[in-house]
Image (cartoon, rainbow, N blue to C red; front, side, top):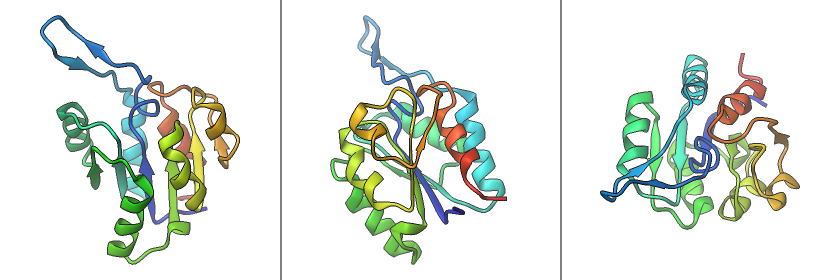
Length: 153
């Protein structure tokens, strides 16, 4: 499938799913440069990338800005409705979208897109429904692995 849009969750896909806090109340996340390369690969083929996440942090905003991610939606509880609105704006169908997620909140969107994927650390319910199951854990390059399975060349 050559998607017209690639969407992704963050925690558990681009990160290991952990929440790190220091004694001053700062939150930390670790991102893999491999996943950043996934955005570069998509952009090289003219495919926009969007992040849809339930979290709302400056950390994700900074990462998205650095990688020139096309769309960023944070604090989302209904990922499917956000994807539907975005598809309408872009005049594409959900069947034109590839999405990777790892947890319960991702399931409705994973079931609705044209191509779905999950990192190795995804929950069982997600692994059972996706088109592509990476053998790479979130935070270690699972997003890039997903992008590389797409027929975008």
